[in-house]
Image (cartoon, rainbow, N blue to C red; front, side):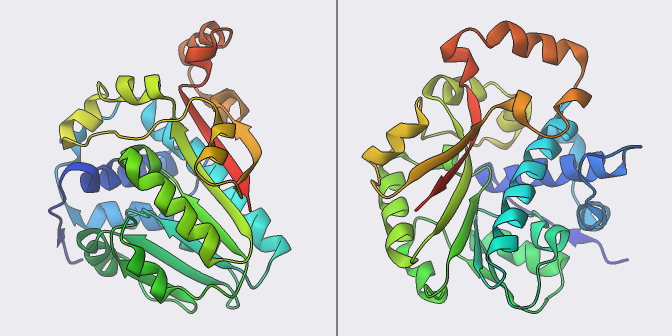
Length: 271
């Protein structure tokens, strides 16, 4: 088996955190998320994953969140079998292989050129699937994505890394480009963004956080076409009951306090 050298830095390196976490959870006895492509990718990558300092609970926690994005995407494709899927900041996620959409779906994975170069070495081509090497804040990448179909936009693990001034233009370009669709992303509150900087695995990569949103309905101040469909917190996610008792107890303690309850949420919008 050929070993693949990987040299990613800062926020690009965080894609290795989530890849490794999904692979570890997939190898577990009763996985929330089965991700054989992630397992194979981790076996092939020549990288010291130990330096990421993942806490014991993180593989399950990350997999639970990924599972919810998979569910939202699958549900949308069930209702729109020839839709476009646009995965912004895809990192090294193998979502297209987990969901395995029908051949009528057009699927685009977008990330920095350095990340896409690694993806091309790890994952095979497939019908209807294309990778685009570009920063999501560069408006030109949308020139490569036809805007004639409804779209499911996924931005898992992306928005919190964007500079605040980049969020509004990105949202406006997306809702201008497509006739209709849904957009799913996870968001930190402003307090959550400050607290996340202390995470050991994030600190190991040198990544920095930018944008946070306290009330998900405030997105309308950035793009009036976006309407909130669902706001989910950790206790709402599939597999939450498998988290350690101590973590679930901490969530119950935090829940009555608004500032802590909204540290991190999964949000689904329509337009």
